[in-house]
Length: 335
View 1: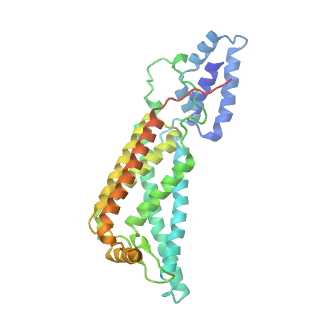
View 2: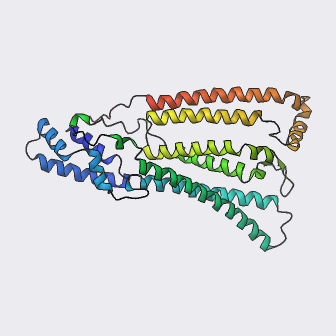
View 3: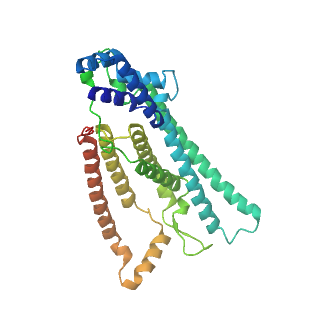
């Protein structure tokens, strides 16, 4: 009976979660009917091999029509879009709140309040549409190139029961959806703030007062290519995690590469001349003046210490990613 469980798992693992139980029960019934009274291991082997490749069987449940994004990936695609939309709503709220507070003293009519709301919604709408476009492109490319694991299983090779893989433990190598949602959220927020509203990254001393910008706008613009590349890498990695749902060697390598890219971006940012505005540096210097420390002289030491800390964290992240990707996936205990 172990082969039957493996076969059913191989068929259903790529189906939408809501359909897996029903399909499992249907397959179980069909297999038992085909076995009849002879439930010997040899007859089980012959019956399953007669049914054919479980990947081909899963396609029959999903459908084989030519789609931009077919049934094989569609439910994952919708999950990612839901997250993007949710993130857009949160960013819209943040944008409206900050804009409203920063312009509180200058708002004199209800029309001006509506303008602040409309401006925030417009910026967020543009951002979300852009992310939806690129997520759609990623999924469409994967659909057309068939760049997911099972598609590489040879179609000209006759299926054998011995080809079936062990059923992994439910918790083994599974990727947390909560973690993926948080990653997408902070990636979209990070890109939106730096590329579209860097003015919001500021020190707000009191309601309605003039804010102190932290980053020089021209410096941020000169690094926009690096920001976009890092953000796109993060979105691609999160999208692939949504699709696969479990750690594998490819995801481990990509996650390790992303950690190195992220470290590189951080080093370039932190060591960039004129990254911080003079107003912000003056604000910090005034804040620590009572300690007797000359902040501007000590700034390089703070920078180096920060980079050492980030490098250590990155090494741990790389090690964790590679471990998750390459560690063995123990079979599920069915006893």
